[in-house]
Length: 558
Image (tube, rainbow, N blue to C red; front, top):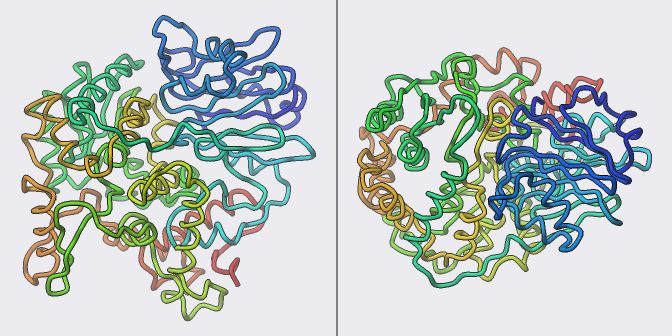
């Protein structure tokens, strides 16, 4: 990848024996850890920084800001503070990052509190290897073996849960956790602690500060703009944007409303037409999911050649941290339709919420009855047990099921392949990972962590921000929008709302994916396109990282 951190718990000789260190922008070595980094924004304010002394070294890779604004180099600041405060010093960083520190007795690797960057690791010949590019880490294992549990989770839900990967020998630095030469463990930065404060004003202020913190990115800046509420905030707050980009058919409602928003703020607007390449079936794209997340979330990939900017802003995970994406809503069944009501579900179920509403679950024990393979006896029970295991492992982080649900959802966020691609191609700002916004999420009670609180905060930032409503949310309240959406889907002859993203089934058919890529696997042709794309992800991933050709991943489950 273009943007990468790769290292070993060892010395510079150990690192050179595994990787060609000339490919990195900088290489640092302490007494017990050596690391190489690549980042075109290396040294820019808020971006990757490095520091080395006679006693050790430190890398802050990704995007990180300091509480002490006069501190010039976060890596130098952290190396000094670590010697007195230990891992608690890392908690002072604000942003989306992976940190390596080698000083005193114990070298360590630490991710940001929500693991917005994955760091993979494996042990090779007694040396622990780690890195942000899974292809490079897996490549150090001469004979990787597929992890059956991981493969089943990915095919069922589109994510591999917890700290595992698709391979038995490769794991990830834990969520809100750390890695050492012979262990890994959890920290306590991500813990729900609800309290009372002015939720709307506080969120409005924090949003403004989070964007202002990232105002001066290098080169020409652009925004991935949807017709929703999140990304338009950048057009309101930033006055030097070169252009905004919307993924969608030129005649779609998504593009129509996005164009109006761009005109409202005087920012030039371009459309990324998904025709001819939306399925993201090539290896260069699939690598950004790493077969722990679906590559289909890289919606914008078809327009890379036309995005003439250097830095990119986006609203990914605003709905997760600041609105109600993982909030279990109260509902009532009326004539077989689920009609939303005000308030929280009085009896929330973590697995039900995540499987059937938030993750892309498919019940494979029914879909693959004709295929000779060993599946779980009950797909729902299999996924439920896997999700509840994650909840139980992190039980110290939440005080109720209302917070357990977003905790597990955030820990296993399916959409990060979207930002992985952006951050590898551009200087990308992950504003939702700002520590002030994360603190708001953790401190706001679930009944106030709602869409209405979020929309009220947006209007405090800019009272004209909500002028153009998203095409699938034409009414003023979430409840009315959901009722209309449900009725439109149920009543024959009434047009449903267009989805924000292009129609997956249509593009799958038009791009002839079965004929081009799955002709030798007819047993999967009748599956839904999203499940088949997961097979494509796994197949491409395995073939790229092994000498043998895997025509159909179901053979691994036989």
